[in-house]
Image (cartoon, rainbow, N blue to C red; front, side, top):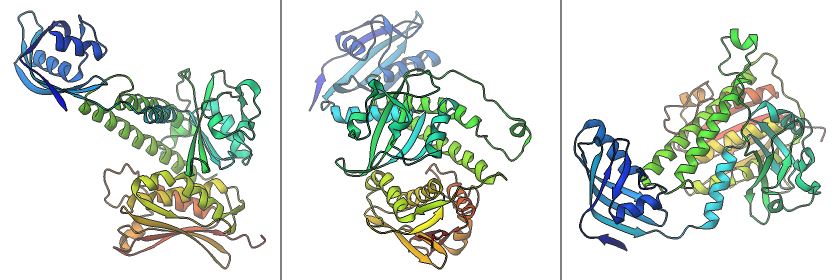
Amino acid sequence: MADSAPGVTTARTDAEDRLVSADELLHSLQLRCGGDVPGVVAIPALLDLVRKCRRFSMKLVRPIMANDGAHAISALAEVEPAPDGGCAIRVRHWQSRALPPEDQVSLGSRVAKIERQSAEFHAVLDADQRVLTAEAANDELKPLAGAMVAMPGKTWTGYVEVEGGVSSKDMHWRLLDGVNVKVAGSRRPWRALISPQGGTLGKPAGFTLSLTSDVAPPVQAPTLSPEMRTSETRLIGRDVAPVLRQPISRIIANAETIRTRLSGPLAEEYSNYAADIAAAGQHLLALIDDLTDLEVVESEEFATAPDHVDLADIARRAAGILGVRAREQGVIVDAPRAGESLPAVAEFRRVLQVLLNLLGNAIRYSPPNSQVWIRLEQEGGAAKVIVADQGPGLGLDEQVKVFEKFERLGRSGDGGSGLGLYISRKLARAMGGDLRVESAPGHGARFILSVPADNAA
């Protein structure tokens, strides 16, 4: 229930937007929002109004909202230019509504999400914390990612030094979440963040590993090779991508800190602005990743590293990684059952990359309360994974266009680059297989990844 304050509350600011005097209500709110008297106005909506009043030299009357962490406050503010260059403030219709107490579990989850967003290293782990894939955002951690990719299947703690020399082979993931680690070749301290993916908290289907540091990386200018300077086909360059990722990740992390009010009270409208900044940064990061992958698959020297893999196992891992996203969208993913197997000859991480793209698209464009199926087939020398959804489907002309570079079929606002399926087909064909689609408008779509079957298995 909201509490109302009778009468008018007044205050004054100087020519530098500092609150130099205020009645009790505004004085108290200024302090609770982290400001002082005298001090720059700490109530964002009121500061915005004061600045506009000074800029246009005119009286303004606007409703304002504030949040001091414990109360949501609304009022009608009247701001008028003063002869000394500052402003006279009159606030009416003051209403204060108590906010529910902060859920510490939710708060901790938001803090962890922000830390992961600014992390400089990411890896995907299986249910036993063994490395499946790894990627570094800077040169400092590239040797670690390279070692993990070259020798996958080991527990991630075997590649780093865990603080205290703890033997962590059989440690529960909760005991490793937040542990300090040392990385060979890096002088900075690192903290490991473990997030369960899929399954249940008691028995996750897998994990994501992130490494973050409180010490900022040294600022380095991008080193451009002669080929990067002269080739018209290079859009971003694998050396430039990490340099771009670092500041963008920091922008996203800071925006998330503002959005979730971890840095102090904030009105809802400003929190929404921060959310837009974070979302735009996420889209930009995804575009950088796609452009980097595009250069890799289109380079003349690109080749995959075929190995003996189980497509059923990879499909289950992809479903586990995207399980949370599916639940948030209200989509049920029906993955291959335990015990199902389909041996093939392909590169593990590239198959996983393709399936994550196909499954991610299926979840994104499926209606709520629908299903996505992952099925396995073998036809002669081809092993196939089929990802089928109940989305809007594709017409015949769209089925051709969907694999073209930068093609988004008229979609807008989803942050996609139009490169995912183009890159996925390139990867499939590089592994000696293919990627195609079967669909009809209104009847969903079936994307079929085929790679050589392992007939010797």
